[in-house]
Image 1 (cartoon, rainbow, N blue to C red):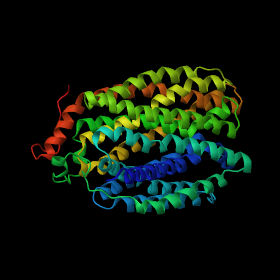
Image 2 (image 1 turned 60 degrees about the horizontal axis):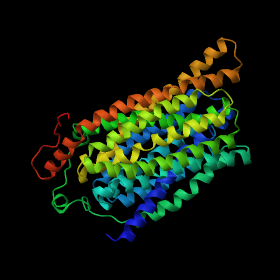
Image 3 (image 1 turned 90 degrees about the vertical axis):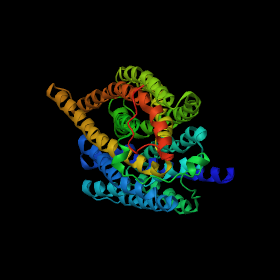
Image 4 (image 1 turned 135 degrees about the vertical axis):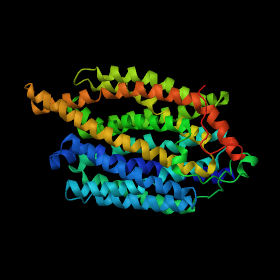
Length: 442
């Protein structure tokens, strides 16, 4: 495939991923307005994200199986139009229940993106370029999320309501969905060596994938990392407003810098450095990410130690922590491509999302409930409702550096099986090993 076609495909996939994360973060960006409008608790606010996550996880498995067999551009185009339509409908929701159902619809549409797009990237770019290609695609996460907080916060501040921000979010996705039908559709394994590309494509079931040790560790790591990031996107704006005294537009701008700038630098650095260290073995990608997250944990802890009202100090310390969080995606997603053969990669991504999103949904709801519990204790001690709410969400955020340390251990464990699992995948393609080869620890 020509470089022009590769560049077009990567740019369009980035655009789809940008709107994928933009649309899903709008509710987090204007969540404080929704909470005040309908008198919701933090637990209910977390439930809006939980609804999105659960449907995303379940439907994503079906999309993954479809993407390993069907036309991925059709899946991407249809999904983008669907999630954009439900984002617009969210703007006319008349109750918490209606908004809950419309967010489920957004989750169904967005579940199409990751399995189909990652499968396409694996067939568009060879192994030595995948980390960088995935990092450019995954720039949609920090840039889309950051732009959502920036624009949605500004729209909410300008209009005095939260609904217009959802209408603004819906329009670009409809256009990108139409363009997605023009994406190239390379054969599965097209970017692999000829001996690999010529091998028959495995059609083993999703459960067989869980017999790959490295993939199991990666799935657990995804649950932990995304619990951190989803908790931050769902509650960080509320934290900055309640604890540090920012207004909704100021909070949106601050988070746009944290996610858009810090996340983008981390994503690109993770892709570039991940490809470099992988020259010394596929396991080095996971060890590199484990090292970056080991540094992120104390940085996040020190940021939370800043006194109430010291927003600048918090942001200055949390920016490097957030940058390091985002080194995860490009290296870990590239590792999935290295241990799973081409005909099962979309399903592997869907299984990854299915398992970790169920865990993340439970954890996210628990995070909201923890904030409510700590706030109720503050009220019992005589704090005003505003002070109790601020202390509650501040206390709940201390779970972030703790989870980060656990994530470091999980990634290191995954690195110990990665090289053997890569060899087993190559043997499966050559017909010399069963699908569920168990790799020995190194």
